[in-house]
Image (cartoon, rainbow, N blue to C red; front, top):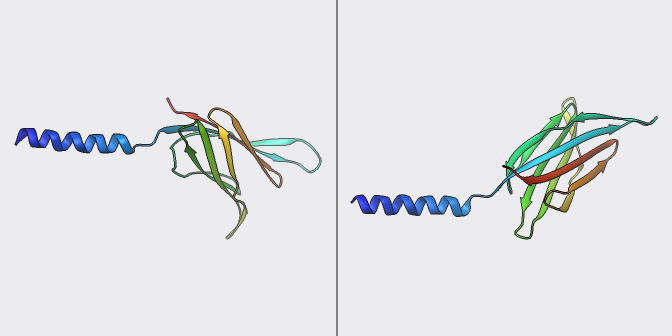
Length: 123
């Protein structure tokens, strides 16, 4: 009986380990460009998210939802949804998909907003 339970628990542990996606550190700098020149850094969050899972960053009226997915060749696919909230309404500004190498910065420019995202393996 004890051997059967140990075997079952080992099988469950192997299943969980094999299906676990790597944790990724996503570092984003969000800036707003001004029409008369200059820019403001709105936020520079660092978040850890599992590969293939969504994470949302909200700064003032801007919402940045990102899904980083790590592939075996070290490429990261960044799927993003950028939304601007104005009171009770929300406007989807863009839904870009960008491929970048692990550790390199991918940049997205949407209207006055610039989003620079670097993804690396979480420690």
